Each structure stands twice: as structure tokens, then as C-alpha cells.
Length: 194
Image 1 (cartoon, rainbow, N blue to C red):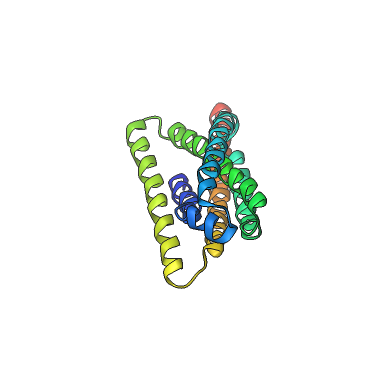
Image 2: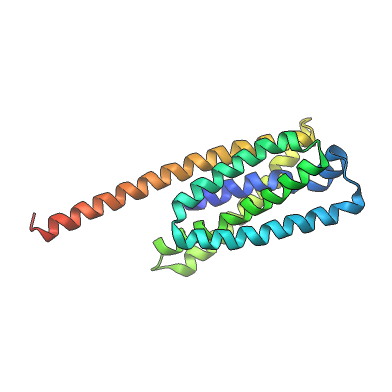
């Protein structure tokens, strides 16, 4: 389920990001000369997202992931309105990157903690899940545009995928907590000779 979260979230993030230049220039009305500045601002958001995600991964990965995916869903819905205003889009674009980069550390922490006996295989599969999501996001965005969607509508796909990601995260967290509760009960029974 953690690998599914990676692939789904990356799909969500890369649907609009794969087409961010035409979104910014044709929909938002930002000049081509200013696009590098917005990409720089997005990069700063990504740096802070990585730092925040690292802290959250050390703290409690699953609660952090649920909050991150919820915020991402809200931000992509906000992007549907913000995309038509340069100032609002600049702010939302910064937070898209911040939230988009913040989920990587908690989900990788969770996977590597669970797969401590085979960290090399787990790491390889992490990269695979990221790449599947990147490719799927670009492909889905392209397919939507081919079928007549407007660039401004692409965040709908992101919101949909983040909603699915959130459901997967909640399911995974529930199973994790149920497994931890079962282990605690079993340990208690073993300790009392039951």
C-alpha cells in the first residue's frame, strides 16, 4: 500500500506539472520570461517540503502522510480557481511543490522500517513506484488534453488521484494499527502464559 501511495501521489503531482509552462502562460497569463522565476519559487517550496517531510517522517509517518495528502487534495482544488490569477497561482504553485515534496520522506521511512531485512530491494521498488507515477501523470495529462480538456482542468485529475491516495493511506494506517494491536495482545498473552 505504501508503494501504491507513492505511485498515486506522483501521478497526481505530475498531471499538471508536466504541462506547467502552458498552464502558467496560456491560462494564468504569466509571461514566458517570468516562468523561470515561478519554477525557482516552486523549487524553494520543494526544498522546504523535503525538510518538513524529513521531520515528519522521523515523528509519525502515517499521520503525517494523511495530513499531507489531505492538504494536497485541498491545494489542487484551490488550484482550479487560482490558475486564473497570477498572484494566487504563484502562491498555490509554491505550496503544490512544498506539499508534493513533503510526502517522500515519511513514506520511504515507513517502507524501509517495515523492510529492514531487505532494504536494497525495498529501495529499488521505491524508485520504481516514483517513476511509474511520474510517467502516469504525464500520460494522463496528455490523454486529457487529447480528449479536449483545457489546461485549467488538469488539477481535477490531481484532486481525484489524491483523494484515492488518501483512501489508500487511511486503509494502510488502519491495517497497521490493527496489526500493532494484535501484536500487543499476542505479546501480552505470551507474557502471562495465556
